[in-house]
Image (cartoon, rainbow, N blue to C red):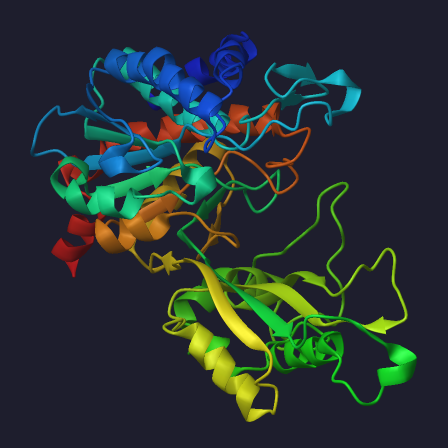
Length: 471
């Protein structure tokens, strides 16, 4: 007879015995950099040699879709059906990583070789996302080995292009609704609130990029001969930015703000403290929306950031008025924000202030989405994590960054639970990316607890069905 405590003990042994680091070392060794020809070869090998055998060992039927529909993305679906009457969970992970940045890692570390040092496991993909999806795969294996069944149906989707914007993922999900249908979505990506706090986040902020360009003339002109006569594009561009976001980080254009702050979101963030980790910068006083807490600004509101700005050669300036200036901006926005034709709204805003010579140009858009924090699945997951760890999980309405959550919530219509096994200081996308052993240890136990509980919750009904039955 299997037991929850027995599975959790096996999870602990899997970490302390060195089995998990060995699995992670193998995963890290595949140089699965998306968007490159060499990376695509490595991705093919990673799907063939690592993920497919792992899913088949779980009793899954595996379908593979290479360069689906002519895109730069490939997909893998593993399906294990125990009983159509049981709940079905859809899990997700991405097999690709960003460039290794070889030679920039400290202490001679290689991004493609796992280095264990000071309770940290260094290597590209340890945090984003191989280490995280490996935790969940391992938990599924441990639960299945302990009790010879999961007690639910499993679907696991892997993609190979998350780091390049998940091309064709939305179209793929729409075209394969039946294969991906489920009762709940559980995945791991992004960071926890901090290294010590188990976390559930329910979606992600969106991202809308745009350029502002003041291209006034092809040449630069001597500032002594022409100053006061020619409009300076850099000065004009700075003024234009100031009408969108002020010098204290407060958005000045209503069209880029969310329409409301839902009570359920505000309630979940009321007790969340944003505490920087060792080596992290301290949040600046007086920056951002003044009537919101740091957690509300980060997880519940919109921010507009200037990512880059340029005019002439700042390292070698000359006494001349430049001919053009350009800035790259990014709006991070929460669900509910209307970003339809945001380029046009920004342009009209500038023209109304006499700054129509600055042209707005939309670039990339990543949709926002989040599950209602009052959804019954949230309390189910919170209770499971509390039983496993003895800690109260932080429930964040959404991740501060962007993930393809909208595909699973909006297109597939699933309640979405993200249980991250990383932390804000993991250095993902940078040299010295790492996973913390203690988080992997606790994360594996959390995942085991969740999957064990899913197989036994409500006598085969889902939390949503149970809530509806008692309503």
